Length: 433
Image (cartoon, rainbow, N blue to C red):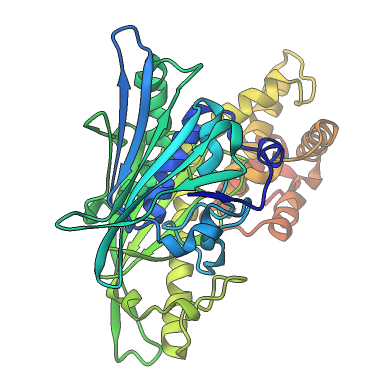
């Protein structure tokens, strides 16, 4: 049965569909997880010459409910998923573009789905052709027994794509980068992605891990909650922003909260997974989408939750500073010198010490807050460094620390390190602190 959509073929082509086959396949994988699948399988049917006959993406999700077709297939840039108010890793697609993205490299897409409705299993087929995306064809539903719900989308008439692209290390690495954080989030729930039968691995993206346990007490001290905190630093950007993923005692995510380290100043790619029965009491209406602060309505749990966020921020702050000190700061100092941002120095011993002092000071400031140079115009960076160099040569060098304290919060250790830098042999007799 042919059904018309509320769109035109031209409107789809001009709506910003993915331009990379990797992104197209990722869209269909996310659709499976959106449907509460735990397993997604990619099967590439090709011959010995690398010609692809078809690409299938199968999942064990809930299937596509027949009554939702006018929304999920009939309206473009619209989706039943967009009404989800809770920020969740389990609902990714919200604009309905994924179902049309096959047109980048295939002439048609055919969905075969099994769904449970009113206690019985039904199956039916949906087809969209590349040249007539303003229509979709739906078969009559039939009853089935002893089968599992799920959906398989088969992309046929593949063009401009060779099997070597989908079997390359680049493709595998992209999939690991896109889904590794999500598979790790659900590692205890048996979530898997398989490509031609081989499970997708992502361990090679993990650069650093830390596992610890915290116990936090209620304001009255009469109850306590244990939190298992699992920190991961990835060696490259991942397919999500940087979050605290909050999991209940069943190891399922109930909410996700942006960490306070979502800036592009450094390559600090991280995820933090927090598991506790504290989150068993979570209810969707408890979350404040605008602030992510009021996860619970009860005052006691709110206090514990705010204390948890404070602990997490302090923990990540220490991890970021460790990362910057060990990895990023040397790169930044070399960049400043290479681009000519530093003042001009001569070959004398005095100039050498001036340069060492300035670089030591900049290093400490950058470790404390690596955003200091991010988004700042070149001329301003050169001016800032010039002023610091001038202050370090005068008795006014003692005023650098108070100025920094007004701009960025300093710990006692950070304050001591900066003081040690500012106490130079040349100005000890001038009363420097």
